[in-house]
Length: 215
Length: 215
DNA sequence: TTCCCTTGGAGAGTGTCACTATCTAATCAT
DNA sequence: ATGATTAGATAGTGACACTCTCCAAGGGAA
Image (cartoon, rainbow over the protein chains, first blue to last red):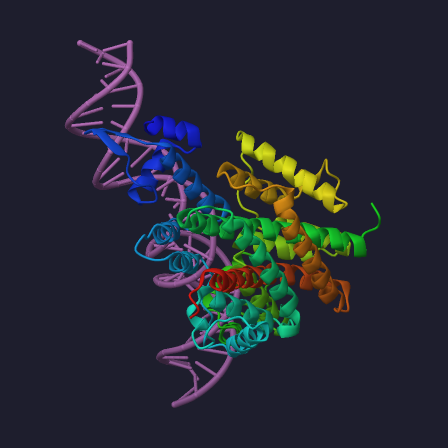
């Protein structure tokens, strides 16, 4: 399959495919002549993954490159590759350390992890982008005067725990470690919009139940 | 309080505050003279809300304006204002109707809503941005070959339902309808990063439990 | 009163991002 | 032979969220 067909089958313009090749989101095709390359089903698959991560998962191009590089880093084990890939995911602005609310956020987040009995080394939890994202979000809520302590967070954390079990069960259905790592990344990223949209729909439903006029 | 103090207390540069004033994210101050205005605690509060929505909630400036306008539209009732505000939230790319996976996504999403017995008029569910976001996400998973049917989605939907109950309980603690609407929007947006970060941390924890080497 | 600082307001400029367009020379399909 | 296609490189585009510069008017201290 050549460029035009890859474009045809993926629904991505040739200009964009060339851009992804330049950005090393797609490996180059197999060179046939000085001016043509052959692409295979694996390229098509990869292209669809890249598109899904960027368009549905809203991951920046440069981040997608890092994530995919981590997934394919054969020099490391499954857990390390997955960890690096997830840590490369976007996680919003860093907490503003000059703001006292950030200290509150960090204290609350740390306390939450302790209550959940998660194994993170609490001294190095700050090394996890997802942890800093949590700290920044709690800090923002605190700054606005919305109570956001462990009592409010625990229901969220418990649901997150349950979903993680479901997700990992799904991942384990894949045969090879390579497939498992890719599936874990894809499912982590692509279920995020699923989760957010379901929460918004559920809130609409629940609002309607409580405040609606029956229609 | 004048511009410099508002900037000082919020940690937002005067240039950016002026930009928000131009973009009507902040109401103008009370005019003192031809060249000076007075800002009050309500401006500070609003500025912090705007910052949180934009920086933590990752909402575009133009969207934040729409959301806040809807929240403050006194001509309409609570449910309608909240609905309009939530519908204005960013929801990713529209589903690609030329792709057969989108039809699968729409069918799956519709079936899911039916199973959950949510009250959405199924003919007009497509009018909800959150529904189209769900359709696009399921379609992307389907295109990549990841099974994503109602059996996989139900655990997510049930957790979303439970979280919506928690969220609405929190909202109902606020006294006035105006406060309730603002709280509902703020909590909807600002708990999204909380939920996503907790899910990623829970996945890291669960991965470590299953695949970790003990450390 | 003089001098400098701040302000509101408006417009232009900046840096990032994800493409998108243009161009060239080589090569392929007919 | 000739028109289309390709790899590769460079430049351009439009959206976005600021950020800078300028101006005239006003205020505060010496």
